[in-house]
Image (tube, rainbow, N blue to C red):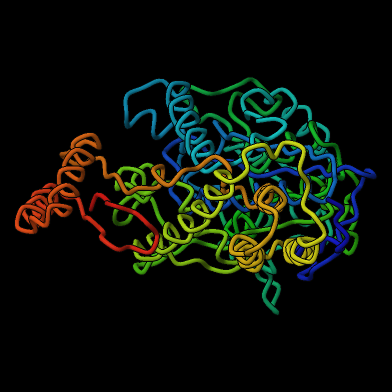
Length: 487
């Protein structure tokens, strides 16, 4: 379909929505800050990748040739973003008494499993930090003379050498004081490590020789090098969680300025990317998501409790990416019900017309597609886009093949996998359940026979038997489900 609405995206650097104007005509080059693979990602982390996926899908929907890069940080990220604490990877390797390389591989695969479960499209390239260390050293050598100084602990970037440092974060107060406390030896409180030397007498599992001694690159350096190496400066869009907006991305921007021009940020191109985009936090009632507080809410926990992972994706789409999103099990259940309704509508269409390979949405659907296009073009307003999708799903007296084509076009952006899911895929099946589906179906068949024979005592007894094993039978449920397993 032809999309006509101008694509407007909120630029965190300028704090306003701006029309997307590609650096290279017809192309869209996007870099997303990926995970540090020292632990499992929690569902709040994964919200960032659902957001970035919707952005990439929207750019494809709008006709751009997309090159999307996501990095894997397997070295250099300290326990504190402000250059403090231990390397997260080294610390986890020591705690688990494993090779740091094994730690990185295990958690990278776990992250990729979550990516697949959430129907997040594969990027054009995964960049792994340790593959780019030599390029990081060359990058640092290129900016060191004008922008860096050496301390006993490593090579530090002097933020006073570039214009408008911290503009992205709005980190400066009226008195000009940054929110990062001063550290002994630094020229400025906000100066940050480009290269961290291995302390005397220590040996790290990940360390390299450099002009500043044996050590490892700083986390901020990695993203500058990988984004520039693969996408070129300036590229179109840089994404990440809102927590990156305060320290990591301002430091990345400073390095990009030093590498390219040092000029001010009134021209966003000088930051390395034309547009910087950030998703807001996922929160639960106890506060912001954290790996160290309460039940570790990773995607696998949702799956173990019986929820399909795409119910979580739908939960994310129900809120604007720049708004805080509250997680609750009740909210997840409601999102699952909403997903079920959509899946049932698509199943009914497929049953009526199975050959839709060459079908396009007809004129009847054009106003809906235009409204959908307008919603996603308005800074990825997926909440409105979902309501348009649902309006199409319930339309009556229309060609089923054309209707299915319209839903497929919309789902190419939302990524809910509607043409592939079935009702049975979405049944709640907790991992802890002590009964399998064959047993459930056999008992339900016996119960139907009892009800047909008006043996209601036996019917009730079979229902109670299922309930004792955690199966809730939903007679008369408008969605048509016969049962669900109770977590």
